[in-house]
Length: 79
Image (cartoon, rainbow, N blue to C red; front, side, top):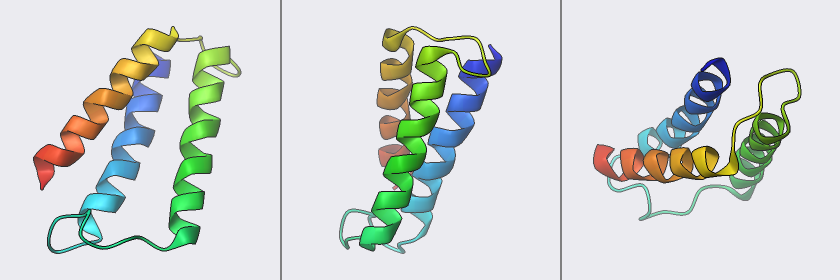
């Protein structure tokens, strides 16, 4: 449960950054390349740690994938 909560907080935080940076819909303008790189690296590292169980209990890939889909739906719902 702790690993799931940690991953949820990281992914929701990244979604909030993209939603709140734009007054209109977040896909109408492109974010800076450095922002995309930083977000991608952050999500990849945290997902890897959660999948492999480094410093936390491992999560199955199905749960991680479901959380990704839920976060995308959350971000689209905030618009």
